[in-house]
Length: 218
Image 1 (tube, rainbow, N blue to C red):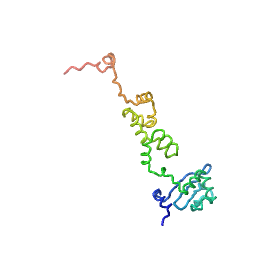
Image 2 (cartoon, rainbow, N blue to C red):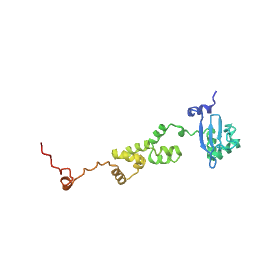
Image 3 (spheres, rainbow, N blue to C red):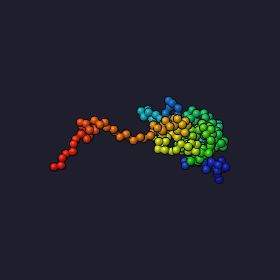
Image 4 (cartoon, rainbow, N blue to C red):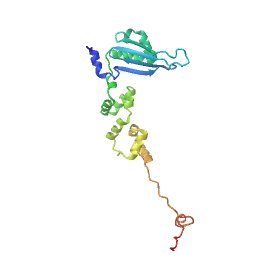
């Protein structure tokens, strides 16, 4: 029978069965690949050594370390490996996670997160964008700022405006003042080429289109 913790984790598990998984590259000069993988019961740390093929140990197998939640606080080897390769903040995150502090917002689908942000004011969106990389990306995406633009401005959506937002993004266009916006819109205006005007001499003089007299009918 699943424990209460496993039942709590179940709705948030990834397709691979993990409650948390992260793959990264170890800090320079190392080029090793590392992964931390956490299930509702155990913590795994894996490391793939990137070694030149000319070395004798080039075929070295990946290293895997694991322990239970109960063992992790006292497993100095595993904690040190995670800290050295992924940083001390990662160790602190694992400590909080296995203590029951699931970061629910980060696990919500993108569509749900955007719906939440649609209902926030501009100050709250700015603050939320500072939380982490995921919210920073969402806080600057066109899907969010195109909706904000429509709700807060009276500028009609023209072909020139769409061309401008393709170049600069909806967020940057939203924060333009009226003078900047109009100046940029004029640059987007696809004016048709003017019809060439001929002088009298060009039109009827030597080499002009009307310089030749019509031939007499035979």
